[in-house]
Image: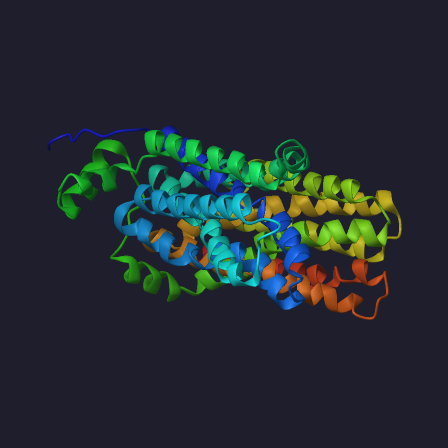
Length: 428
């Protein structure tokens, strides 16, 4: 059997994908601040402001589905470069508008363009599901939890880190100057990914013109690759959609990652209005939550390999239930802070457990499953905050804590679904 030459190693594949996701996620950290400053100039309605704020996050979620499935046909390198390229276009366009028109010449005529550029910036968020597939094909089943925990944990550090850097950047460079600095970071990071980001062996062979059957045989026998795709983009989405466990994993990720995103938006208001902290303190406490959840995700990946994804998920969602109950009833700053840290530990570990389960439960369409789980699961970030907000519609400050009943319910449901997965896995 001919031994085909390849580029990269599993570790370099992991590093490359992690770099791509980290810089893609970091690219949108300026957008929330930008939307607020644009509102001050244009005096747009709350609906239009909400649409502008949500533009990057919505595209970052929806595009995860087709781009993750694309990984199953070509590997992750091409989809990742396309998404990072689109994000660069969005960042460059926003920098130009802010440098040229903000604030004196910014008019409502530019609002549709701002919306489009926000959507383009959000493409960087969609790199998550691409990297999941890219990393999964490099590693055997036994290491999926650890490596995907490292990938997602390090990549998810971006929002917290850049939230801490943002006030200093705005003070030093101004809004347009900060965009230029972020744009430079994104371009350099994309260049690094281009150099070190590589597809797994099977996809490298396909690119060289090796027939699929031979490529799979060589990758399996000579390089030890265990996971292979089945079919084209639509096949990957269709195959994964027909497996009921895909939708259980979507529900779990809706609670864990969707909840993580929701609370990064909810906690600043919670700390400021429920405990009357300063804006800086509220932002710092939120960054602590975000960074803690991301760091714990790395540890959660290792635990998932040792305990199994199902047991880790059950333990994690049980912890988020306890933490949510604590915050719901607490009127003590220290107790609520403890509750938020427990939430970070539970959600970070659960996020790792879910993506340990993706290649295990849907091995024939990892990309498609990662797209459904990552894309639809992330919608929790948009659905959950308005539901929590309904508890403070009457102006009662206690509602900011009572809104956590949403997580009490979601955690209970997710724990039950984790038990279901565990029982069916042992029966198979």
